[in-house]
Image (cartoon, rainbow, N blue to C red; front, side, top):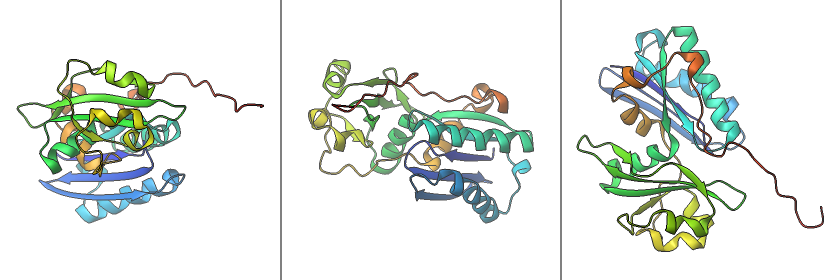
Length: 228
């Protein structure tokens, strides 16, 4: 089966296509420019693969957690493309995609993903690889203050391999991971989402209008600076 994957949920903008067992991808760090870069990147990978959207079986998208604006942009583009080509869509976790990349590139079987969620919190989840080589969550995706993360992961195999921007942002998390000095997977890639999303795609996909984000943090309470 052939798929397009799209992600704009973090500072990175990422697009990948799998067609006839060949893969083409583009990745760019472009904070504040996702709405400008995403569609040209989609057009580029389609041209590289020499296919049209209608030649594909579906679209895989990053559903979050991450930047509220970025997640909405990615899903909006997904919905527009899926409507136009009458394709189904499937959301993949941003955190799971980074864990998958760690397994694919580093061969690690236990991963904690942590994204800086701002407001002194992190989005986080713990993953272990299954028999099919897919990273599966062993906890719920959640948003926590850094001092509560160690308690949340009590009873799991620690230290684990760390991915995401949360580790560099909060020193309280250092004891949980084995690679504090070599955190080189900071953002998710559409290529990793392809591997996750193509498994049982028909079972988990939805019509374009039902493609939904998973923010994890459902409401935002902006904290005022002292004296404001």
